[in-house]
Length: 309
Ligand SMILES: [Zn+2]
Image (cartoon, rainbow, N blue to C red; front, side, top):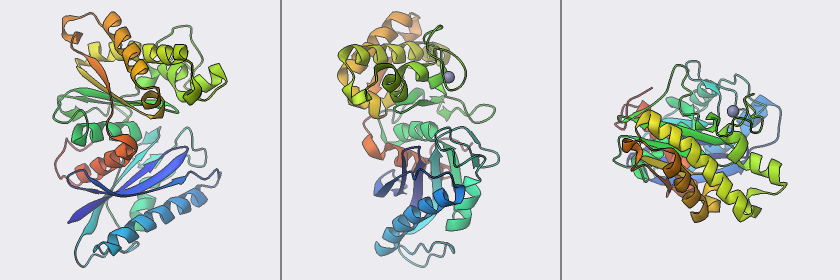
């Protein structure tokens, strides 16, 4: 049995796990992202988490010695995928996540390759999530879909004609920066009225003074409306009929959020080919990001799924 080491890196937590070639998540370990400004200290935390997970592979029959990549029998960890918050430089393998100040142009891909001896595929966490949805989630078997995460921030990945879109710098799919309110709030990116500035958990907390979990029905409905508005532009532009939404804010809000989003989508997307477009919740749950990272790793190893970047 061969396994993929999957790593998910966010501003609030680090996660590592093992993903089979069929997309099953076997092990998952999570830890809070340490609030350090030191790049190497943060990497040391990540390396310990990775060691723990590779240790479970060894205990289960795999021999996955960190540092040597030596494998002798049974299950082997043969590849690694990393989903990380953007922005990043995919050509160089460096990351500069907006919400992780300790890492600026940090050579994450090379460092993990060095620490594990594995080939490493790195990409945006929301693009990885799109791969997971297309692999084992709601979008399985679909050639055209948008997958979105509405949580602390808003991200997305677009699959068209069975291809995950990368774009000139690898940053395609940033649906969080579709303008939904021309005179709206100032976004971290410098523009005004981006979806992320109107509908992210960060935006909701800033506007209401409360955590998203304590949002009123009006806030839930407006958040859904903003997401539906952004989605209306995307489905018209890309001829997409299925939009899968995950993330703690969207899934926490639940049905009222999805109803409001679909009502707005219906009202705003009026072309014949957009009539069937719908917005549905992700069913992957907390394991989705790691399954997405696993998809990156397996795909880079030229083991099926969609095309390599
Ligand atoms: Zn923006």
